[in-house]
Structures are given as structure tokens and as C-alpha cells.
Image (cartoon, rainbow over all chains, first blue to last red; front, top):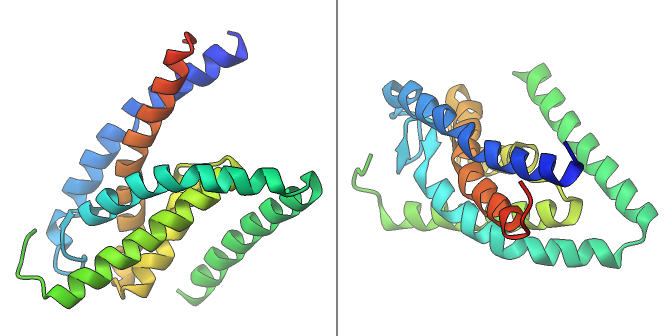
Length: 97
Length: 86
């Protein structure tokens, strides 16, 4: 399959795959509502969903514009640092958990 | 699901979520990655800041991230489909 068709199909499949996932997580979290923040359906934070999706979509072009202002090298280093930071963050959480 | 939420708590919740949304959008646009790779870490910090119990924090991040991916993937697919690619 040519690459563009593959990417487009992947995006289409990406719409369907999370749906049973969301349902599963909503159901699984139902008994734990006491520990969850308000406005959550099980393990799905409705307020998180309502705030993040539109805001992230609106802001993404600014991130893209920023990427174009950086040199290739700077962008590579930034991305590497970002991944490292996340990896370290979770490693620390695991060790201390 | 809709208990009596004190206004202050709601404002803090919404504020933290909006800030998280801005950070997610910037990171996704900047690095060209979206989805769980960016949403889950951002949510992890936001829920940590909001004091969500550790026993449910990660599951909440993943569950919410899955929900967010649906509209974003829809938008992405629509863009591709509009360009006539399948």
C-alpha cells in the first residue's frame, strides 16, 4: 500500500480502536468514583476530554509554527530531551511507587 | 458523576485541564506526535497537581487519553480523506 494511503487508513482505524477502550475504561473505573475527580465516567475524565481535545487542536498550529522556527538540530535535541524527560519521570515514579 | 462541586474546585479543575490542553497542543504541533505519547504524560502531571489518588491516576490518564484520541483521529482522518487518500 502506498504510504499516504497507509497513513490515511491508519488514521481511520485510529478512530475506531479507542472506542471499546474508552468503554472498557469507563466501566472498569465505575467502582472507584470516590477516588476520581468530579465529572468522571469511570476512568474517563469528561472534563479532561472536553477541555483538552478542542484546546489542543486549536493550539497545535502554534506548536507547528514553533517547530519551523527551530533548526533541524535544535528540534532533534528538543525531541530527544522531551522523550528522555518523560522516561525519567516515569522511572522515578516506578522506583518511588 | 455530578455531585455538588464547589465552584473553586471546578475552576481549578477546568483551569488545570485547559493548561494541559495548551501544553498538549504545543507538544503535538512541535514534535508532530500526538495521541497517548503526549496526552498521557501531560494528564499525569495535571492529575498529580490536582491531587488525584495514585491508585487511580494512571488508569484515569489512559482512559481520558483514549477518549481524546477519538475526535483527534477523526479530524486527522477527515483531512486525509479530503485529499482523496484512503
